[in-house]
Image (cartoon, rainbow, N blue to C red; front, side, top):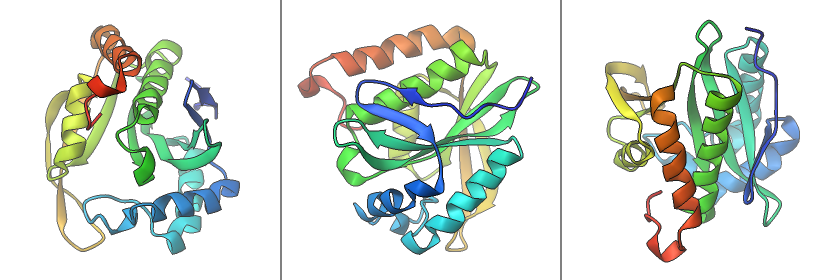
Length: 204
């Protein structure tokens, strides 16, 4: 399989566009909405590290193991975060959806749900992936609950998987969705988007 081509994924409220340096200022502004880089259990780049973070992501894209996106809110036409396909294994193919973060103002909104639907739809329906992974810190309980509500299954926990910026060691929970599970996951995500906001899970 050829390396994944940069592509734009567009829905009603979210648009995922190939990451570029022109998104730098918008991404910096997004991180400042909630001081996201101060969350010790995540890897959100600090404002002064955003340029080098973009360089790193584009370098990994050039090597074929990552496809990074800037996430736009189509209502405000502003950058509100990032997400990526990473750990791409073209032999499967299989990949991980991760490196995801959003400005505080769009967290727990339909934008996040639609972005996941766009990414999973492309992975399964266009790329025919054998599996799509999600990984998160063992102690990031909000992220784990959100992943589990997608319908992803826990494959296991990688003990002392990586070192965090503060020097602590991260145990990583690895989840996945496989093609036989995708129709139910897709239906659930579409239902989340269509039901009244008063009924929407506040952590979705």
